[in-house]
Image 1 (spheres, rainbow, N blue to C red):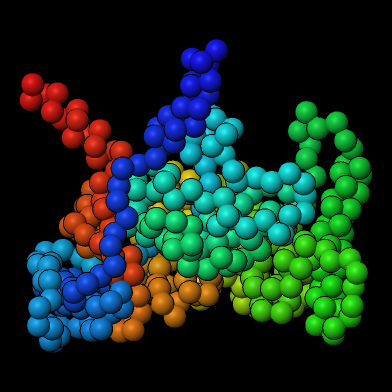
Image 2 (image 1 turned 60 degrees about the vertical axis):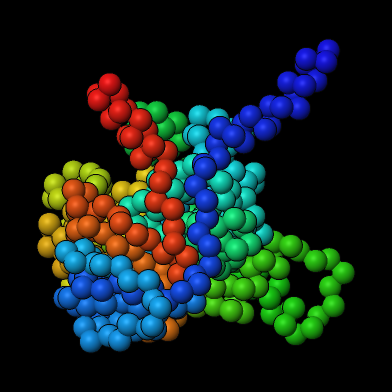
Length: 431
């Protein structure tokens, strides 16, 4: 019996040791740091050759080719290297899921269809072993988003380094995550419902979602008017930020009919919308451009959605959106997959997207979508020193090897489970 009790007490500790990395979060910046003689990708001001970036107390103090190095500064030689602002994962499950096959490590989906009061930051695991593998490729910020239901909850912008959720969180509520109902009739053999039944179900699902948004708006109006209510709705209370502060809706949609339905809802309610996925965006570019919405595109490394689409439809989508002046951000599905984010951008460059637009899709445009562009998304004086130094082009998997990374001026530990295993098994060949 004693052995059983001890085993039960030790099990949580053993599990935490298995899933917690040994990387130590960076300490606050104590001295000015100057990265010199590097190729600096400012994003907002072009790419500067043989330039320098100087930052102090977590903020950039100078960027350019004729920069004065402060006395006592730590100087990093960037000869032959590239400096980028930290990449941003705009829709990620990082920190919410550890092992897909183990339910106890998945905290990304809440029970029920309408959960606007759910906040991703509350469930975020700072000790996830996946986080160091993601930031090793330059992804230093992530908009962590819940999943499931019609309204999944609030996403949160998180730094990918830190001790606790409190010091990791950049924005606790960055967007309300919505999953737009399926709009197309399915004719597959496994579908038992008739086309008419499916259309009726589609209409009901869309109506239920819009009615919920209308009810939340009415609640917000009443609350602002000072109407005394004895019944406080925590779900509608959470949604007040959408109607009172302009918090965006990140709406997951794929088909042309879904996109057009979302834009109809936007016109009806006047909300700020960010389309997520939107594979059929090329079929309704005029409507998207007129609506002034941004798009978080799906994986570039994917297959065309329709048989009649070109083989490279997903690869050329970024170039098409850039040509139309529609801001977009690159994304990757899941949680550990976020490490491949910059290479999606690199593939888009090979299919017509300019390198500058690809860089914007990883930095400035997602920062603008999430309302953090005053501090993040580009290398400018006064902005956060969230940046990294790569041995080569960061959009190329062969050359994106990080030498240094900083989040708000704090040096980030670039070791991770992958690098440790690589070191371990390279030693085997030497033995």
